[in-house]
Image 1 (cartoon, one colour):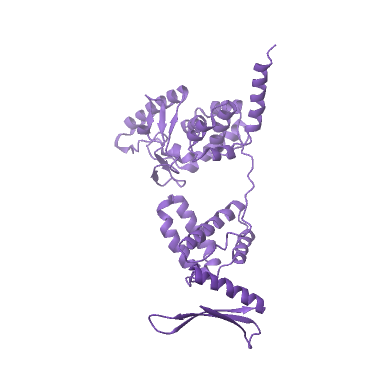
Image 2: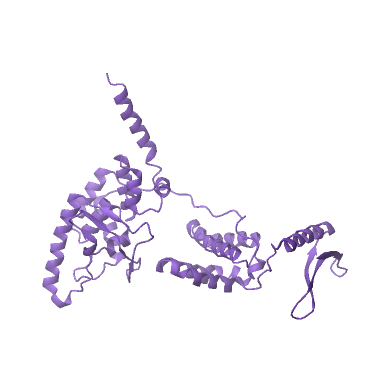
Length: 373
């Protein structure tokens, strides 16, 4: 296999061509060409690299497919692995941001400069850094897959400066603030949802999808087997991830409150008769229908206003649960399993702000035992 470098008289640039023999089907001569190098040395260097790749069987013919077509293809392949909400978000990113920018280029022509420019374009649109990172991650994942499918040789997104989200310390309540909130919310129709968030660390969708058949009063636990989507329109079997399908132990107060709540639901069923829509839900409207997540949040924030408690998100009740358990010295692995994290690392990274105080308290406890007078 031979190659040669030649100066293009029309452009003044340097080109190279490699003769790779004849096409077995047509009998015509096959060549690889590349044009537009500024110097002879650059052209010779690129020629040597390509010859080595061809001789070692490492060369991948650049795909002529448009990136827009490819990423649609990739998304269809990955769809079965995603939740409904994630797939919806990815399709929105593709339609509103990716297709109109990178999508106009061919897959093989994408360069690190294109990707870096795209990230800058997203920021200029005023998108949050979190959203910029999410969109970048979609592009990056699709290009990693293209490398594995041998459509491109290298992922052009792998070498750029990736978007970073500066994590803010999670807002949580202390024990007295939790007690005050429970006191103010006890008459709310959503009280059981607040109590479950605080005493189990369940996610909002898990709470709103919880069924009575998943509550095991005998063994004092519940099972996460169904979630309600963020828009409140449909149930999804299973949880957020494999690790999220889990059992969660229940304390005696929560168990007792659940039993009382079940009696109230039974009363509603009798009162409404055939008009009651039985979804077997623990947290539901008076007629049995799923709770609209927006209504739950609206009620939550109204309670915060009335109680003058520090402002937190509903999801921060989950963080409050985990942080309070850590502060009480509970085993980190147990807490990680309780929250449905796929690894202890996620739990440690999320609640690292709690650990320094715990270390100090542990040191003091040890010292008090070692140096007893």
